[in-house]
Length: 561
Image 1 (tube, rainbow, N blue to C red):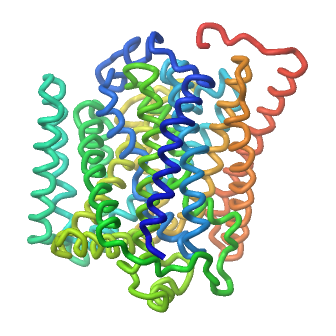
Image 2: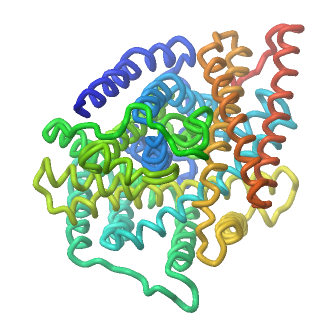
Image 3: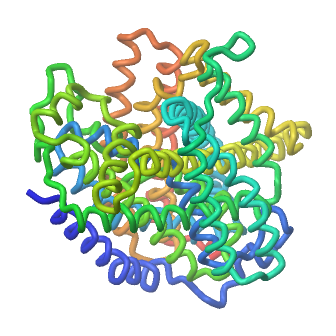
């Protein structure tokens, strides 16, 4: 079977999602209003609240939410077979992720840019806010630790990506300054992407690597410390100076990368060598519910709701832009997950079904390395690129995505810590520097506490990250559902996905909890229990609100409606 068929069916589904389903949700359910004054205009502080061109904001939002998850998750989930993975990536992006991401952005904008955790107080209740923010903080903790480990691993395995991964920082700052001076966006985009691709060529020619030990610590640990130092500094800078333009240039680079990869499939027409449904080894986790947790951001992500409501909603120029930025951003991530599945299931990665089974001999194989290797072979075959350059291009893509997610993740952790400082009147926590140090310190504590001296705790906590991520997505959909009911609008388009995701995510979290308990991974046991308890309590609070609405009728939400 040719992989072209998978591409055609997947893109046809995404086209339906954008042209039909997202328009219906935006116009009939969320009722996005072009005359609504968004928080970006109402506050406009030049740091966090900044009215932003929707194309720039799409790039910033997309690369912040994408990270490496839509590559790593699907490249692992393919072990169960390409059919279930492709179905969930496609349907999940259309009916779950797009509705979730656009909705979180819209609801936040209607509550002066408050995060989904903070606005849950207005929608559900005061206790819900505290519980919600605990889950969000734990997820951000895991996100940052996970991506720190992924970036460090890729920097070591693909040292040709080191130069372009750091060159993008001065490029982004220059673009940020030029955008503020109203220089033509298309021109600076072309120049910025051209410089980035030149740096990729330089990196392919001049690989850089840290020594195996740096001041007595491993190169993995050294990279993690460097990355979190950078993330701490970047998270305190104005969004227009580094976060927005860095994400934008990464988004532009991704569009180019996706065009190259999808075009390569059409030219090379590789055969699918992975099985449609794989006969897995004994001891492999059950496909249900672990498939949904493993694919994670490739189909639905609670982290998206945090970004949508935590940073993106503060930069929304017009409310209808939420459809373009939120829903289309989710489809962009689905497109990345889809091409990842094509790459790691095709003859470009494994020449035959026998070789594929050797490479995927057990669960947890594959990941980013499989995508880079298979994708590099695909680009080299279709476009005649040198394999080293092609691998460097894709490795840079993975590193840059994960890096921008860390940027956004640390910034969002700072927001939460500062909100706690305001709520509980702890003035020290309301300080930017103190809140950032607490955020980074807690991430490093998890990375090294769970992973030992190498700091690879992110790799160990991936299953818990996936489960928590999906649980948070379902909680966000729950808040959106209650908000819609209070507004007197149909809520089934958020309630049905919420129920399905909550069921499989909670089941998966319970399965992982038992695994951690058997392996005596007590830190992860405690974190799993905390997530489950907080989630159950949020659901109970929501059920109380549903009962009150049924008993007393729809309550008014005042001006925020």
